[in-house]
Image (cartoon, rainbow, N blue to C red; front, side, top):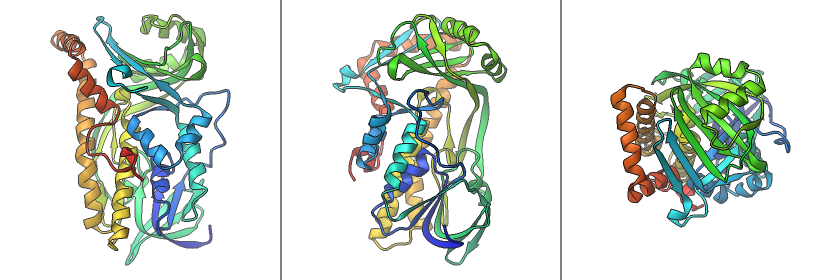
Length: 405
């Protein structure tokens, strides 16, 4: 990148959401910079799994197919799941089956590194998309025509529109003084991958235990990705156990549903928060993904909401270019904000309420959730509606999420 360049759009943050937005802005006259603070990742390992995975909905799959990057993910490694079993310690269970919806599967578990690598393969083929790796924003100045951004190596760029896709602690959001509302859940997620005595049956499993939800998500070759939400001190203890001790405790917490845990990968933990930005947009500024909203991972919807943000913003910008309107005006950007903020808020509040219901051991709430799971399990229409939402087939979907390029 030369000492200073002009762009129409600069996306701060080149993770899954930022890279999806960049790829969705290909084949336009917009000149797009994608700025990622981490060095460019090497190709995903053929033998080791990424600790971070995402449950990709059918809507997100349609987006990736339309953008021409899904084949790259399949060629690397994806794990479809046909069923879901959700139950609590008291024994009530809900079973979801794709066959009930005449669908081949409910979604896919995909390693985050597989998603980003495939997106960057697609980005590299686009003349109007430019990637900057290993650089962070240092200083931001608003100009008459947009923004001047100085990177931490002294390089300068100018852009009409800046997009924050830089996570829950967004640097861009802080620079432009967009406030957030939220709280810590006083929980952390322990993540790893394991191999179990019994096959996972292409099924996503989630058990609500006293200290938080525990999920086994299917990977290839009989492995499962683990996301175990628990109090921070317990998460730290779990990460410090020997592999044998952790395997034994995990088997017990999961009620040996898949037999004994026989092999354990490396472990990591990360804190869990609820966050919603007061605004998604300002003049010349837009936030997407975790920069705009962060949620508990128990429903596996976080990244999918961010991908829908990216698709919606791209659609709004495409329409502005076609109509020869400013891509950075509040009139343009508020269409994106109105579209996505209400959709996201509904999902965030619902997941937060589920977390509070299942994270509370008061007798009255325990009875309520046990009774509720029993009722839902006996009502196919309600079950089907829940799973249709989980698959991303409900709501005001962007064209990309409906498979329209």
